[in-house]
Structure formats: C-alpha cells, structure tokens
Image (cartoon, rainbow, N blue to C red; front, side, top):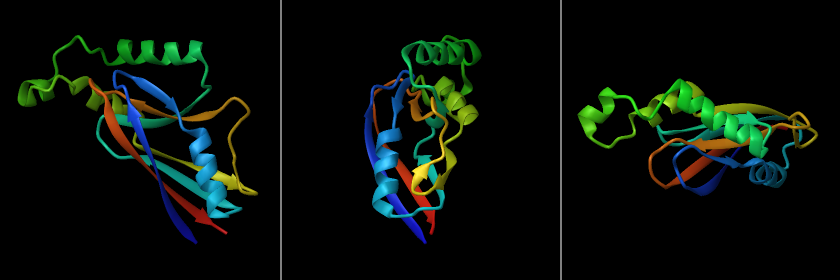
Amino acid sequence: MVITKSISLHTKGDCDIIDITPQVEQKVAESNVKDGTVTVFVAGSTAGITTIEYEPGLIADLRDMWERLVPKSISYNHDRRWGDGNGYAHVRASLLGASLTVPLTDGKLALGTWQQLAVIDFDNRPRSRQITLQIMGD
C-alpha cells in the first residue's frame, strides 16, 4: 500500500528550522500503515530535510555551521546570472538534500529519543513550502 499525504508550511527563510515531527506522526497515524517506511520530501531547490535534536543550542549550532560552510557573503554564479541573491541557499539545500526515509514500526516513526524531523528553509525570503509524504507498507 502507498499513501501520499502533504503538509503545508509558511517559513521565514534565512535558515528557518522547523520541527515537522508532530505533523508527520499525525499523517502516519491517519494512514493506518503499521510496518513500512515514510519518505519525507520538500519541494523546492532552496530547502532541505534532516533529523536533529530540536533544541535551541543545536539549532543555533546548525545555523552557524551553514554560515561557515556556505557563507551568504561570498559571490555565487547563480546570483550573477539571476540577480536574486540566493545562490548560497541553493548550494546549502543541495548539500542537505530534499528528502529522507524513516522506517515505521507498529505505526510509529523509528526515531531515536532525541531525534526529530526538520525542514530547513535556506532562502533569503519567507516561503510557502509543500512537504510530500509517501507512506508505504502494511
């Protein structure tokens, strides 16, 4: 069985990190799939999906890491071509990735105790984001 669900979000951009674990858990519960997987995918080339211990210190550390790794302040060819100033956001999203898959056991996400699912919006402006879930299993 394959069930497709979606989650709509409004983000602030600028490395906005949003815990989507409760929404994903709700959609999985609605599906009645007990054992299988859920793939979580964010549409758009300036956002990504990861797991994180969603707490203020680590959220700040993650934002700082992105700035060190892919700084906003340097020149990007994308910006020269399109003039939208978000070349860094595209590079960050490419490194993070747009999806991940989580096992389901007895209808529950097989996450660790301190592990949550997070969307990171790297763009330089607020956005409406669509998260697609594909829940597969029995």
